[in-house]
Length: 256
Image (cartoon, rainbow, N blue to C red):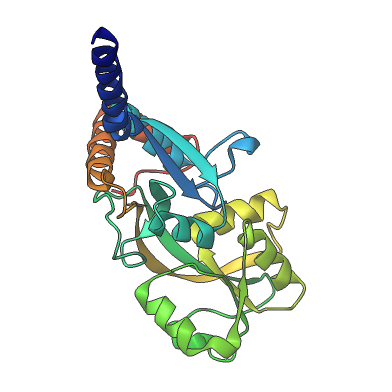
């Protein structure tokens, strides 16, 4: 009889462990993004990107550890919808309307249109791009307006897949394979400086994108809770001045 009772207690204890597993998993959050520096960088280079730094410290205020993984953008978006990760960093709200996301901006996107330094082209609205060969990043969203224009002019577009697409597109520009490169302004600036291309290319104009957020899994049960924890943490970091310190380390200022 005693042996049977012990077995029942052990069985109940094992079931209890299984029941508490999701709560234990909430002590960490798995985030993914591609190389889109300075927003999201490669930790192997010595810095993770200001959005990862901000998110990590914001989550830490709620006792949540951040695990950051670098992977191609299309893979990240597929994995979040499959429930394989908790969040994708650097998403426009219009880019993944089916996924829960935090409400306080984690950054702001500004789209720059870069040409060779001796090209006298000036951007005067999207229609001024007519006839130009344009380099973009595959699966990226720039803004509803820009995305719509690009979709309607597919014959002019050369899309670059994979990580470090900005560097590849700038190389295509200098090789006369394309005439215009469009990407986030801070990303292009970072790529131009680190590739030694200052003076060889210039910005022909810019158009607004939108605020950047983290999209969370809709198939995992704690997506909304993680979003709320992130928003709370961002506000605390801003109030304490820590947000400004993190951004200053990347040569950036608060977007609000």
